Length: 362
Image (cartoon, rainbow, N blue to C red; front, side, top):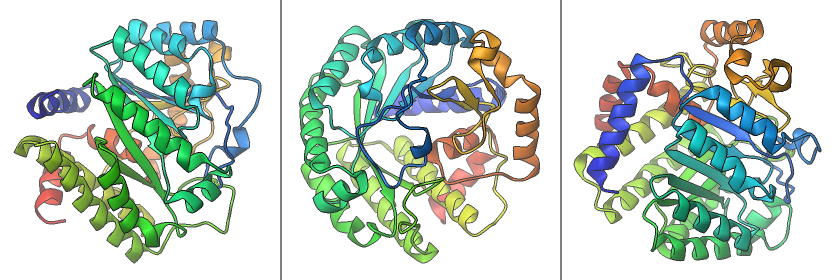
């Protein structure tokens, strides 16, 4: 897909989001609570490995209730532990006409992941399939973070096999995702170079440690360290854009949004008022593996789909959901989660001025 086509698609979606603010365009679905790692940075660890995940019949009902939307992110647990994952995806691709499917993974189940991607790419050539493999540092650090020996080697094996698949399917997007903590901040520069030099991915993404993670000996670095990391991340993104021969329009879109997202995170960490009221529950929402619906991953559930005959819009219209939406706006609720930041930015026309400012000055 050309850079201009990418920019045109993003621009059209930006205009749509600013005009229609209360229609979900991004759904995060924890498709299973089962996991084969023991990550000490996981904010979802209290909910893992339970036996109450929604069945495919229940998911089909949910999908049919939603209507069209743009992006589906399948999370977990480890999404690829779900044996009927292809059928789950089929429901949303065919019923909801999603244009992009994103799946974060620890990369352990190499053959299963590669087989799944090949099948989806063949059957749905117009769909953008984005696979994000978690890598939080070099081998020893990553394996200790994920709580299982050999995870780093499995992740790199999966990535290399997916890169071979990418040579045949231009609609496959490969990303490495790194969670920034006090443990990996000092090796971030060398690790960024390692990933860039060894894997021909689309880009390297980063999240700040967030939520109710298990290991309290792990924490966010000081703000100055985060700012330095942010500058390093911007320089790294520029390398990927240059490698892909991005034109000015896509270069501007990527760098300005990255910088504005970083600025939003830094404002949150210093207790400053957010630039925009978070759009959680309006154009982005969350479904847990057991059917709970949340406006945000870090907020309590507003209802369960089993109580509304699997009608997703009905849950978002419950009294509790409306109260939470008001609370989010009135309390200036914000966080560092890039998915919610980007969807929020895309909801406000005035954000174009912040994007220009971020590109030129910040």
